[in-house]
Image (cartoon, rainbow, N blue to C red; front, top):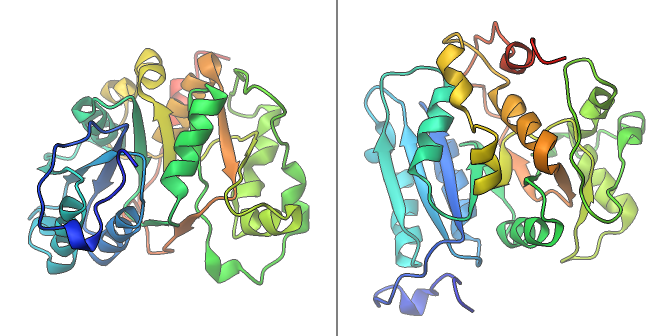
Length: 289
């Protein structure tokens, strides 16, 4: 299969590089164990072809000297994946960091993957199949907290609304009626939904979202057309919600969807952004009611 990872018997061989269909963009700061787990999840993905761009904003670029992180980098490279390891300082906020990563990309699709997400094998292929089939601006796997596996929240799952047919553009704004979809991504709600729907092993279902955090695959052209994360230039240094603003701009033009089953697991580690005084999406759309 073109773009499939090389197996262990082939790790010492060299071959012609396959152009990546996806650039996996990972911003990281101060996480080592979690980042190694994230990379291990990518190493379990078979196809399509992908490249990893890792950008570290730690003061000492700790990921470059971490044995666990570098071991997984070597595994990915042995499998035939290119891995770019970058240091990016000074810190100008997470929106600027995401824009920097976007500017390093060239593949037809870009996956923004947080450094505390493990992906089930087959997740990358499922996302790629979905975005190619649906022709929308992005698809996302909302990360699930498996510590909540026994925490049933049927009232939060009522906001689930599948897409039937094509994914259409949606106008998303702060306080809009679509915000009622937010609880759907809490805890392990999507795991329970997939169970109740008896999802087939390799199947997927697109559904309406308010937004998706942590694991979002964009059509690169669609994200570029929407301005990507260029709004960082007028943003305060401390902020969150930059991913929401970018997704909503893409949804305005091309639509976006979540996917069931998710297959993305949140490691439930402490946040590296403890100060979040500004929801950036509210600023970006303040003058666009």
